[in-house]
Amino acid sequence: MHVILEEELRRMSCGYDDTESVTVEKWREVMKRTFWRTNRITMTICVCRNMMRSNCGCQSVKVALEGSTEAVAVMMADMIMVANCGDSCAVLCCNGRAIPLSRDHKS
Image (cartoon, rainbow, N blue to C red; front, side, top):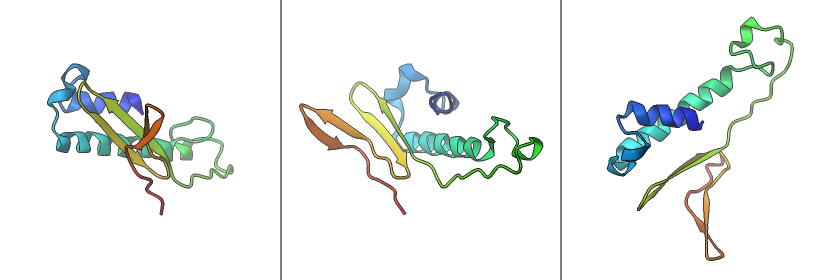
């Protein structure tokens, strides 16, 4: 997922050195596309690591994919951008205190 995030940041014309100048809307779009692309890859790969399930010999293997859980945090000088999906959440520990940075997206 980190590779896809890097690609999406570069696509938005903002490398790691320029993350502070990215607007919140651009961050949302970057994170949305990153999660979408990661999900798409996850749903097309087989247990044998063949990228196209229909072309492999594992068609009889039942693959149980019941959703996903991901959490991503990008730290900048004065901001932390967090995105998550599924029943995961991001928590920051500061001086022994747990500070929630996101919330679960349970159905």
